[in-house]
Length: 161
Image (tube, rainbow, N blue to C red; front, side, top):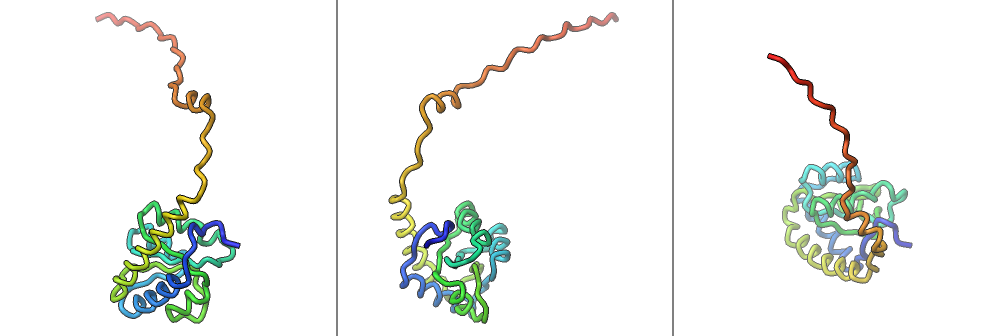
């Protein structure tokens, strides 16, 4: 079952390209590992690409990352396994998310991944049902300006000079 934070499915080909790009970026660029470090990197505007594992449990650890990336206009992708994500960058433990701050020699590979992902994400967004609109009466009520009750003004005191 897909997690609630996974907005689109990534093919196994794109996932393997992502692992390879991360290995290359680790050797020649700068990465941030872990959900906390990735969050800081996104908020500071340093991240250029974010990779999130699709099997993180509890999902609350990374559920904010796709939203944050969208707000900051940072490309992001998913990979199926947090264990493989950790191994891709030379760690012996699993890793929930990685932010690429400086791609180094992997910049072209990351551009290819982003171009493939953007097509997949657009297709999946088109397939999602549109949100239901509120009834017209409720919309009209929201749009109509509310009249403020007029407050009685106290008479101005005259001052003698």
